[in-house]
Length: 191
Length: 188
Image (cartoon, rainbow over the protein chains, first blue to last red):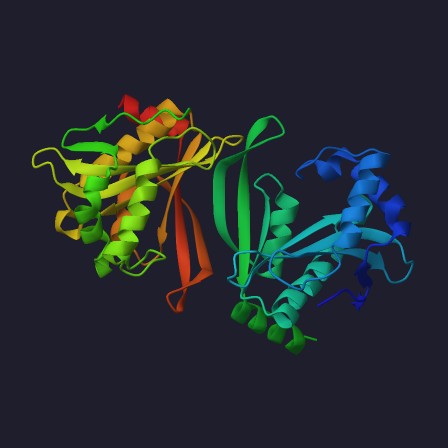
């Protein structure tokens, strides 16, 4: 599938555009945002390069592709985060979801709303069998989000990476297609 | 220049690089359905094994990240090759490795695999300063799971249905041991 705009109650998810540079700069210069990402705070040049990569990640046509969408508030059109869906190259219909949100918009359920869209895309449109999400073991907010969605904690890899000058551990959460089917069926039943 | 691994001597075993003369024993090992049940391959023909043996003979060192050291497991008492054990250098930056093993079923249940893998863990932690070594197996592979537990490795992951192998979804266990844990174990 290639990118289109997806709507939820409060959000619009759509491909990144040149006009999103302000958002990228604002979010990537914040130490608390990049704390558990594989890069440090970014200056203007790095932000431009990241935006270019985001703009190119606009479709999921084959294994190895990555889709990154800007998450916009419907009401104000302000970009508040971005969401990633990767199609693993392994050839076993596996995928991965990831997310970054502006700290001013944490705690309002926006990330959860956006991740559910990414999961629906992965399972219902791409036809993935399993989708994982990963986070640093210290990133409790991220772990809680995946638990709230109903993903299963499948791994706690102890000191599997040397990360920003120290050993770090990783959590991996996962959901299978039939589990997703029953989750979304439950969601439709509940008012 | 790769440094070819010296043979590793344990109580009952000699772990040594492969040579072309191992073809019969290796063909015998990989012809067995009970050996390949939870591997990606089906039982291999002698020709297929001959091809992989030339590869194994060359994989006798750990010089760079990505290298795999394959050693033949030889029973000292008889000189018979009864299996193989390997160590993969997964990552230099993160100092991670992975051990694996295949043993002829006639020799299961006598602690040979434990003995061989224990020696490979020591090799990885001592010789290439690994920080963490993992071992993986299919979640239905009871003997392998028990072996990794017996070695004192911790179960860190149970990945559900992450691979479609031999006509079905397969789940995987990941066990791991840190260098500090290995040192503590070696002390006692």
